[in-house]
Image (cartoon, rainbow, N blue to C red; front, side, top):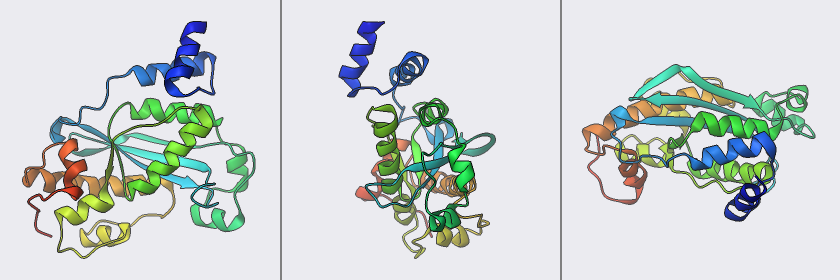
Length: 234
């Protein structure tokens, strides 16, 4: 057991958890990687939204996470995830007004390592989807490193880049723009689970359009913004 602990520290850069938590972490890392060539109709995607302390790009603390599964191109309402990570100090009042997670809720959240491990086990190795994934990726990678002590190298689909590539005439830029464009109901902004749900609806639209354009799997979807592809009509 000591050897395994040393091995994970060497391979992953030094896990900050031990015992049962370390075992959970090792099991997640041992899972087979995401199958990025699986057709959309057989694939599982996890759409995530992440709320932070609003302290700035390099100091933001992850406060809460919400996620929804899109499996076989359908939103699975029975397969959702949400958690609030316990904070040593609550975020500023202005930040609380934005995301609606009060100081007491922040101080009473789940232990951060448990929350991150719960999220990893929910995620599995499915591709992660977000609107403006570069921002979400930075938040999650920083939280993984600071809370669990390990890197997070994972495939992401950025709907903020994919949707304009599929619908170049739409003229949309924000999440709300896209929801209005497709006639989808706008939700309560900055509630992570609600935002993940509306983003999941946009992923459904994107997967349908991508499939019709011959972009049939996650690998091609991830590559889409960087290469020339046939586009669906906006």
